[in-house]
Length: 145
Image (cartoon, rainbow, N blue to C red; front, side, top):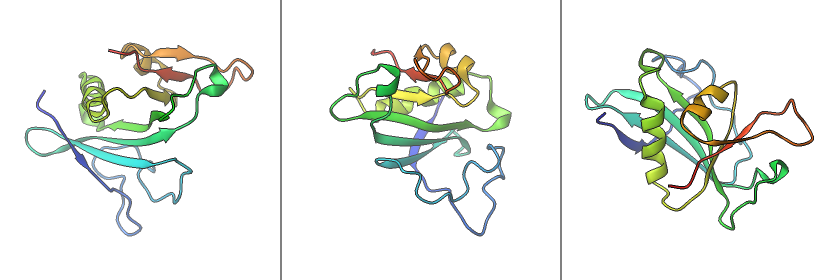
């Protein structure tokens, strides 16, 4: 797969970000999300078509409630990953994660699953259930390569 990552901003108060096969409402302007340091990426294919979007918090301190030690520099949290609907189930999400992780060598990546436990298991990330709140989203931690 010939993919490349570029810095991006999708939020717009005037244009609908729901166009293009991405999850409706995810990419609208939601103001301050309370992240440590937000970074947005678009992933383009060989034809320069946007095929995926990723939103990260590169200084996340979430995870300690799941029994996971927070690194001194914080986690890189995959806050959102969205593969265009017509490109899903082709290994693109896995390839996108590999590309994004390459932007932050040596850092520990996490994600809180939003109805996507199967995806995070399939990419091989370690799963943690909240020890006191079983109905909480599961935490997934990337295995060190």
